[in-house]
Amino acid sequence: MDNDWYVDDWYVDDRCTDCDVARQLAPGLIARVDGRSEVVAQPRNAAEDRAVHAAAFACPTRSVRPASGRLDPALDPFPLALDDTVWLCGHNSPHTAGANSYLLRRPAGNLVLVDTPRWSRALAAKYAALGPVTDVLLTHRDHAAHGRRYADHFAARLWIHEGDLDAAPDADQVLRGTESVEIVPGLVVHPLPGHTRGSVLYVADERYCFSGDSFYWSRTTGDIEVAESVTWYSIEELAASLARTAGKLRFEWLLPGHGDRKHLPADRMAERLHELAARARLLTPRPVDFTAMRW
Image (cartoon, rainbow, N blue to C red):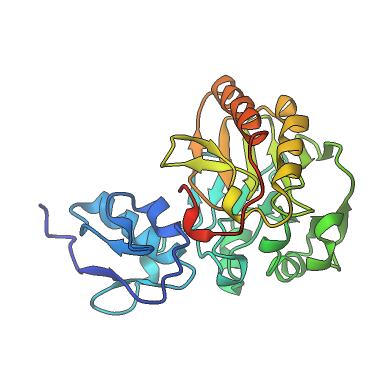
């Protein structure tokens, strides 16, 4: 083991809410133990050290800690490029249930923010350095907490569906109904009521699917899954939404609010999505249970 870079022993403090964010970013180092995240292995090389720093800077409760004390801001990797078009924002907010958020570059050079990280002028300045942010897209009510603040800061348009409008009543653009609509060139919104009444997903350039909490990639099953144990509105409506919409969707990147991200060829994604729609028809209502999530 190369100890030139090695500084600290890491741990997860007792503020952990079991949101899974750290486990997404540092698999093998941080795992779920007795209903919360725990550091199960210390980083052994520079790549693993970067991974645990990413987990620490994304954690909504700042529970991933180095034993020596405070995190070094110079080691903050966010916004973290997933490819040449999309960045993961990190700095997940406790006011959005620790949801992931993303920046998407459009062909004209402007950026779209999909859901939001915690509010910070310093973070906003990092995003502005990548290009002008013209739109803030909310996938549903659970992720609306900082939308207006970011939209006002960037003089951007804030979008939400009418079904969840009470979570952002001052939105600039209100999406309506259940029909798929191209809201800007190359960016299509698909209303998908189920997780909440106003849940939507956004698909950009038939390549990127920002699915909010409607579906995600599960490490447990190795497949696309719905968050049936935390479907607040109606699992039957979610099944109907998937049946109506699955055939319209084509994408390579699955980028959810919660759960793992995944990159696959579009044809394979389409096959898995059709299989998900078929499985969802068999689901029945159940009490909300965060512990039953198949991360």
